[in-house]
Length: 112
Length: 112
Image (cartoon, rainbow over all chains, first blue to last red; front, side, top):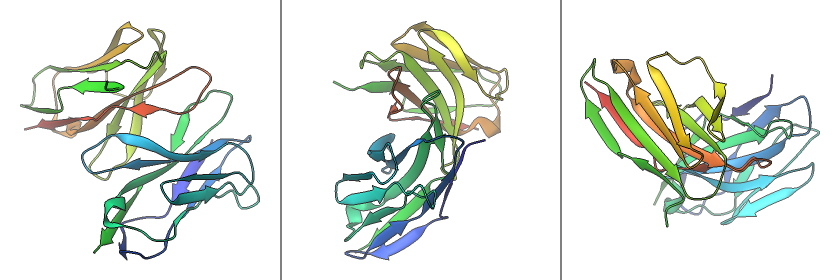
């Protein structure tokens, strides 16, 4: 079945560092890909998405490119802030049923 | 104008008790979910309803019983609470034909 694998956390960085959180997937079809963010004490919220190969999703300085050849959707940000500290979830959805398949989440800690 | 709301936000109770969590969405969506998030932040889908009809029922003890009085509400009743039920429970909703889910703020359940 479909699955999503994320790099294990926590990921600890200093402010203004470059961020990469790896996400790879397995799917039978051509899924849509998502990154959700969960700030401390809150629910998940959509950060960005991409619906087809080579699409780039971006929001709040974060980017991720849908790479079909490597089945990846890595999350990047050029300069992180303390306020980016959160748990980040990668997810996929097949158009056949629109259900989200979730990665395990990666906790990001940014130190001032 | 909260999109997905849950009550209560915190719930502390003793083993063996019965409790309910309520969820309401004002987005006009017709599909709603209950998720359980454990202490390691892993998200597990429990139930999904579409227009008041149960469409996903994962392997969840039958002490958990969802109820959807209308498509804007999805409640979760838990009988005979156990220590292992301690977690954060999230409600989410989406519109048919789309994958993006909108999450409530979560209910932190602590069973002592």
